[in-house]
Length: 203
Image (tube, rainbow, N blue to C red):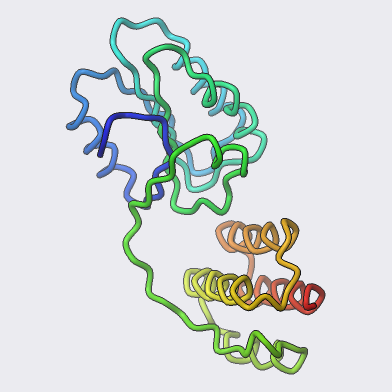
């Protein structure tokens, strides 16, 4: 890892990356705020830790499976203009739940292993109700992790095809689908939402 510039690290191995940071920057004061769901109270704790006076350079590490939007908005100002000698590192397995305002202000470092590529098995160019029905039947027993990879593949194929109105609403729909899977929504339900959205957004 390079110098401790504020950044987002995409990882599902929080402890090993934190250990690496501690090893690489032994002279820094390191504070952590860990949560499954990063809420407003965690954001307030992070702001408090960043505000503590110290002669050492500080790294504030925030780890979570999910960062709520209200917590991210609370962090926005201090991440954009941190106190002197202070850097922030946000760790999470997926950037899909991070607000564009957060992503645009921080370097993104991908420390995830290479995911197995999954083909959607759908002719995206001629996607219709029949194709959606077939897709749902083929994936009615697909688990959440595999469904997330499938939806990511569909998103890439859709964006590459040029046959859909790929505006912010559609992109947010894909991101929301991944968040729903993370929160335990039934994979078939999430895939249905994605398919119906695509039918509406075809040119």
